[in-house]
Image (cartoon, rainbow, N blue to C red; front, side, top):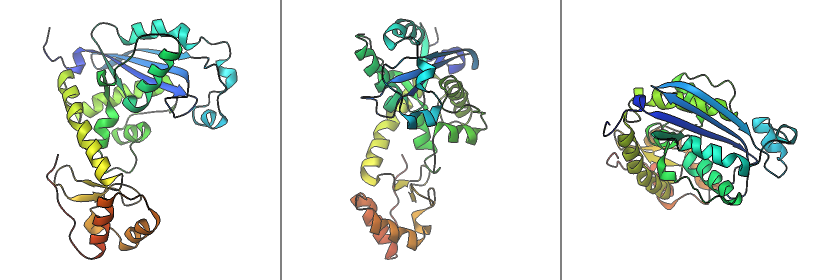
Length: 273
């Protein structure tokens, strides 16, 4: 067996969920989509509707198009759990998602607990492509799955349908590997994810979403709003003044950098991560 197999020689299982809302602690799963990639190509898709046992809010239906009528009579999570867990944990599989660490995995674990199941999916066992997008595509204003797919030329005709989103995430994985954003072997990719997570957490703590150091040069750049990706040194003074006046929760470091820029002080440069 290869010590660190390439993704093209691995069974890649991509998971995506549609839900009643965006709070993993209280919302429920209403659709499960998985896509299996073998040899870097899709080999199997699965989609299961789930009876959540609660009404689906209209604003959630407006996003994914799934209504109470669509899930009436469908299996519960308790009924689906054994087959789903077996599928996700098949020998040699690598579990992949998009925003899975912060959303899909916590929500799935909460549903397993409600169903009386002892099993859990560990977030560290999931390769989350959003981690790589937040680091290597930080200059892009939007980094939703649909945005990244558009950037890489991946068709996503049924966004917010779990099966379509899981397949698109699989294609995105291999596009990001080809782009040099995700390492091509499994263990190296997980090691890079572990390296990036604390860097992103510290960056968020210090700057919020407002600023970030350029990944190559360390130059401080605007990280949010219409000027996202622009060096702070080139940011419009009127926009900076508006943010300072209207954002009371601006992190102190970001506020100080904005104020210094308005005084004509060159923004700091940090060592690239």
